[in-house]
Image (cartoon, rainbow, N blue to C red; front, side):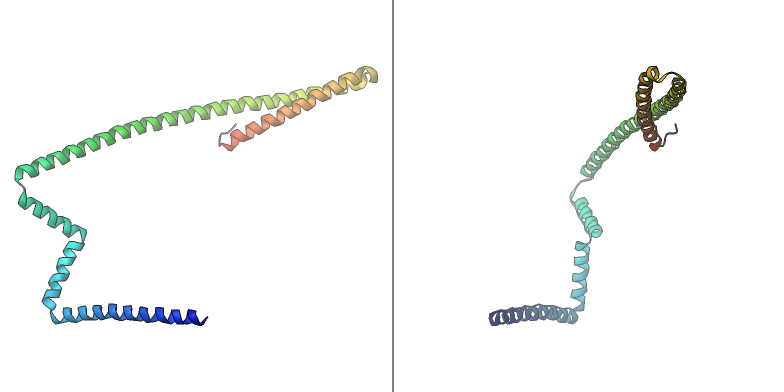
Length: 187
C-alpha cells in the first residue's frame, strides 16, 4: 500500500513538471507575441491562409496560373469539361436504366396485386362453396335421421368425415384470404 502511494507521488511530481514546462512555454509565447504585435499578426494571418481550405486552394491555383501557359490551362480545362460530360452521360444512362427497372417493378407489382386479388376472389368463392357443402351435408343428415339406424349409420359417419374435411379446407382457405387481405388487397 505504501509503495503504491509512493509511486503515485512520483507520478504526480512528473505530471507537475510537465505541466510547468508546457504552461511555461505557452506563457513565453504569449509574452513574445505581446512584445512584437506586427510580427504576431502577420504570422497569424499567414497561418490562417495556409490552414483554411478555401484560401489555400485560391493561393494554389493563383500560383499554378503564374507558372503555366494559357494553352496548358485551356487544355486542362477542356480535359476537365470532357471528363464532366462523360460523368453526366454515364449518370444519364444509369438513371435511364434505373427508371426502366423501377417502371418494370411497378408493372410487376400491379400485375401481382391483380393476380392476388383474382386469387383471393376465387378462394372466397371456394369458401362459400364449402359453406354450401356443409349445408347440404346437414340436410342429408336430417334425411338420414328418418331412415333406419342400421342403414343410416354407415352414411352418417361418411358424411361426418366429409364435413370435417370440408371445414378443414375452409379454414385453410380462410387463412389464405386473411393473408391476402393483410397485404392491403381487398378480397
